[in-house]
Image (cartoon, rainbow, N blue to C red; front, top):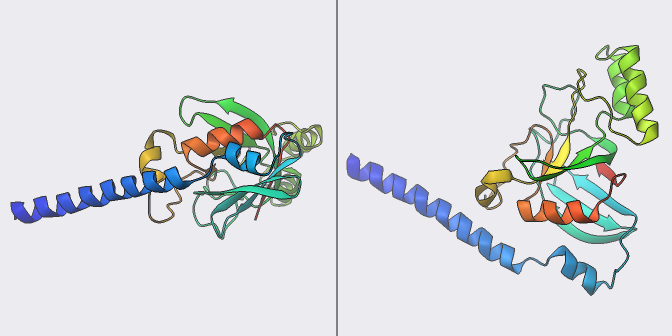
Length: 207
């Protein structure tokens, strides 16, 4: 019995270590964002845009109409569903923008999206999830290009962030594990790239 248990535990350890080393090998083969910009001779960074494909688990970074780099992502819950309330833990679908950038103690650098947007607020008002006062505050933030109230029943604080302290494991999983609260996760190295190149106001289209 003990021998079988030790054999099982040893197999799990070997599997995890194999994932980690394989992930490190793949990371060494990846081209950094700075190298890709140099290859394309792009010196001036402007008109950045992010497009998130929830079905393929990809984040595409554009400068003007040029696709610069594609990142693997993790999401919140089933990607076929879109966020409708603060408790559903789904990733929203729609057109957003980066309304704030912060350096946190948990996930490091994060890009905060303006969820709920005006479209979310219209739906929320129609479904009686928010009241008229809350709707007007979200609408005002939308047109002023600032972060909306994030304490309504629609939820909020949807962001693009890294894997945090579990990066070594999460970035090397051989399958997609949707573990976020509705946010979009890349690995810790990649959030550094996105944080550097994406300014407040950068459009983020999620579909």
